[in-house]
Length: 119
Image (cartoon, rainbow, N blue to C red; front, side):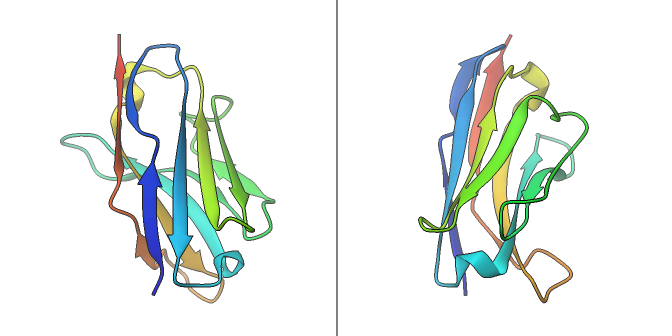
């Protein structure tokens, strides 16, 4: 069982930056592809970014490509989401998730961290 704890959310003005972290425990971190998702009020959860076990390749939703960067530190069992040029429409609860290399779906989810971008 893998536990995921997100941190780094908060309130930021449009155009600002935040870096989210997701610390994992309870498993072999490098066995997992890691993903970031978000959910705004009244909407379904959507994919934001993902990173393979080795750090390459990475994947991004078109809405964040060029502004967000996903990275990981396997020695620290942590995945990051650097968010730049934030927009009010980026406001959401952000979740990290872990997908075991043998799985076809994300197996474990964090509790989420709130990101609010003011205009």
